[in-house]
Amino acid sequence: MKAPSVVDLVRYFLVLGATGFGGPVALANSMRRDLVERRGWLDEDSYDRGLAIATACPGPMAYQLGVYCGYVTHGVLGALAVAVAFAAPPFTIVVAVAALYERFSGAGITRGLFYGIGPVVVALILRASWNLGRKTLRRDYGAWAVAGVACAVTVALQQELTWLFLAAGVLGIVVFAPRAKPVASVTAPPVMPKLRGFALPALLGLVTPSGLAPSLFWFFLKTGFLVFGSGLVVVSFVKTYVVDQYHWLDNQTFVDAVAIGMISPGPVVITATFVGYAVDGFAGAVAATAGIFLPSIVLTILATPLLLRYGSHPRVAGFVRGVTVAVVGVLAGTTYLIGRPVIVDGFTAALLVVVLAAPFVAKRVPEQAYVALGGVLGVALRH
Image 1: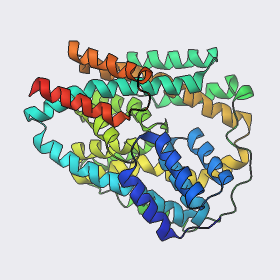
Image 2: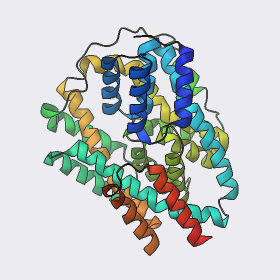
Image 3: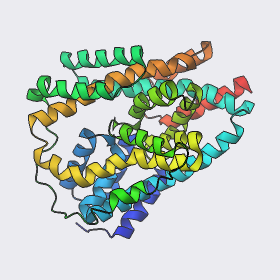
Image 4: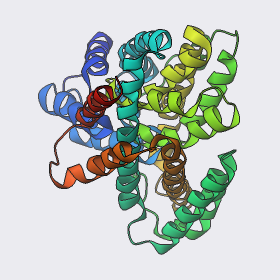
């Protein structure tokens, strides 16, 4: 195994952040192909441990896996280098798009574009809900019951949800612990952390204390600890606050933000950058981006050795499963809330059905193609 330099890591993840499309699974597969098979920077066991941790722990899976790769090769310095390099290209792209959106959002072509994209986003979120639920709930009737309650509470309350995830985690300690799948049961990688006192202050220093930037940072920091698997799961938490409770954005702008996050390269949670810019300009974009990605960095640097050592404990695994099950239900409930004002006529309903049914006919069509199709049709009908 040939260990890469920090510069090699930065160069690779800058390119991946700028060109990586297709969601967390596609990005994770790219890392396996490039880092394990082609370059030999990681062995199979190290990669598999990272994938298991990234899947089981809060945070966007692909981003957390990338930070893990930096951590196991160069400790905290490598983790921080990858964290910045992986997020910088999509951040730059989304800030530029957000600035253009702010200027031209009232134009007829822009509204037509997102009139068609909205139903596609709702359909893709529904598909993400189904895929996550199928893999997570399986034939566990207790898990289905918890997810159903979480879905109903989300639809009914449309507000504070933190207690719901915590309650599900505590319930999972009792209900799911005896049969929960262990997170990991191997020895932690022998990498000593460096610059331990630097990481958190440096990242907090990115937040400009003006306007709503501090509020955006703390909100997205909390959100980052509740993201499991696909970045689309972030929708379940963000919409409840940003649209319904704080009224920072209206529903249409929020759906547009999710669409832009999906068609941009890199992790889908870059949606937070667009939301931050729309709320408080560039300072808001920086604050939201730092907040949404910081949990992945902290968990990798501080929690990975602990999870590798204690992740096989049934109570820990039960808590993780309880939270994950609740995420499935909340995601389903929020999809209904988002879709209600987006599916407004026959065209939007038909487009929703087509995108939902498409994988049964063409399984390898990328999500970006559906978004592009929706945009074209929307412009054709509304412009």
